[in-house]
Length: 475
Image (cartoon, rainbow, N blue to C red; front, side, top):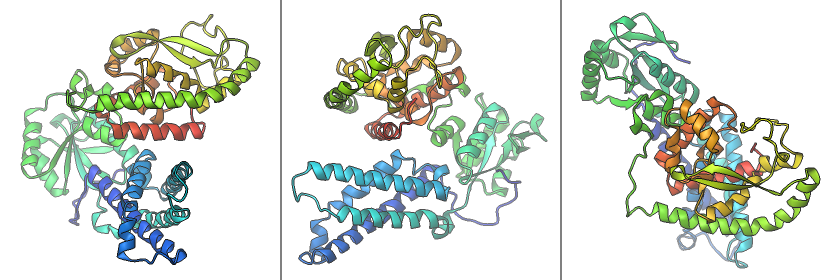
């Protein structure tokens, strides 16, 4: 919902998206640290041999680092720092409960794998209850506790074409409680128009006066073309007065986790990684090492599961257990991906290569379970060991689809710049792609991953993937 522009009467901080998320994290860390101290206090009451003293706290101080760090990791993976979700009390409580349960599960796994008496038995339960209560209070009462920081960020959009429409709609969908788009600044020919329900207030020559009048903190430059003389001068005037300038594509990334590839025209730089690779960058080596370790561990765990799945697959639909299919990997190299068969034999004999659809009649009953649990993808761990794939990355696509999608979608081949993965950012953020529009959205997520890939992002994707497997959210 966008409001009629009016001069601001209150002077309160208008924090950026990154600053608002930082405040959420800071509050969560403070709450988790307090929860650890409360859990230690209860522990000392139960175990009278350990009085609640500074020496006792220092002895167990590692929990003050481990548990907040684990919380931040799980919270990020569960979108608790998504500002749209954080603005909903019901959604926040739901995710908060999910994160607390996940934390308890992680602790229980470590507890049972650790030597006897290496970890406290009920301490983590005390912490789980205390952290849930404290973080819930922080999240629910945050607007009141931080009323001085609750002002929406006032913004002017520069440009009145499709770029402005796109970013205004993105703000309305992903950050309605964080931004207030005061208006649009365009050319003289745009006066009297509105863009996505937001009025065009004036031209470049009036930009600074409009910014002062409405206490604007940020200009969103939404035109993909070169700025006209008066718009450029207006932007520079505002910049000299300390008003932030952000390109539409960058803000769109921050809000959605996607690269707006269909809106950048021939600006190929937007699809490249933010930093170029370096021989001193440890990420590729660490990623490959983790790929090998996880692939070996996963295959070892998968063998006993396969002993149950294989007979069920044969009884449900006669045919081979494994299915090999040609895919395109890094640099356009072709390889054979290995999966558990989920369709009837010769499923494409009459149709040729086509996208699988929701409720596809070619999918077997056991195959539907395999897809929802994503167990059909596990044999690709062999492709990971061979170096053809990684655990995390854009999903490898079939050559027929690559050729067709490249003709229709700009920059589609840019996703071939990195190793394909068993799971990826697009897989955990979007549903199954069975249309050109779906593939365009998935490409936006894939390009975001390529630009921002790191071990932390890989870890988030891995945690989200496990969550989707446990809840049968695959397709």
